[in-house]
Image (cartoon, rainbow, N blue to C red; front, side, top):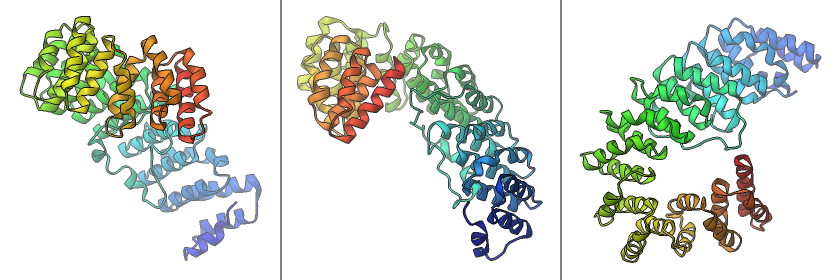
Length: 446
């Protein structure tokens, strides 16, 4: 046990309750005595004293042994105490603490609800909550409205075993949160947790009257990637809010919702901003059997490079062999590397595996590797392409080996496991670590 009396004395004043606690702990009273001492100070009539007690309990070496004393604070009348309780439970990081956080998701305060939700996510994605006792507890949650300016890209590892009770607790906040911000925060958390079992709640959330809730539900649905949600969100392509419409475009494309094709064609031909029109073309290109081959061919020569690139992807996925020569012709003429990457992707889909080397080569580029990698993930679902990638996986540059390990984690088969096991022995620690992470993901998928 750390020497609490000295630390308290340095603060210049030691209230009677604190002195009683400090003396008992300093004398080594044993578990029963310490339990009694913590119980006394956690029940102090001064809310500030209860907050300080929670802080010191977490900092003590055996604070986790006294979790049963924290349960009464779930009903503490003071919001700062319950916020401090949530923060203490997050720091303790035990299964019992997680159970108490689930109960805090039912709190009457939206700030407490949101902090409890973030704490549940933090249990599976460490540092999701970046809190410290040097900052005030309220600062962790007072800016809820400001945290929804852009999507949060993180998710838990695909092999994470998330407690279904934790998912249900978070979904409960989405359904019945004390504020729109708390509900939006819960939707974001469900996306980070890849909570497929909460998909129905997220779809229901897209019918909210609040734009933040709708957007966070769409972002979460995209992360979960369950195609069954696609037809249920097509209606948002007609939403009057352009931000929601843009998010819906990305979501229906990600989910390959064929029902969305007419709406996407309408947006492409309409007056939406350039970026939304480009995303509409990208979404169309992802949807199989969409009947838009002529549209894709027409946009291959568009002046906008974003539309050219998306059109190239569409031509490749349509899969007409007679388009292979045209795609290669455009590849030779194209100046923009991003468009060339899309054309190379289309070329491989149409049978020209030579262009696979170009995509692997772009993994060396910090600018273009995140354009090439998703193409390789999709292409590697073909067994012949997957086999060809095993060569640069072992002989390529550091960047190529690392990013190809990721490709195999997403699209590899049981035959890929030995190749990743060999890569995990690489002399380069970054490559070896990437291979080990890829193995965990791949084995989880298999």
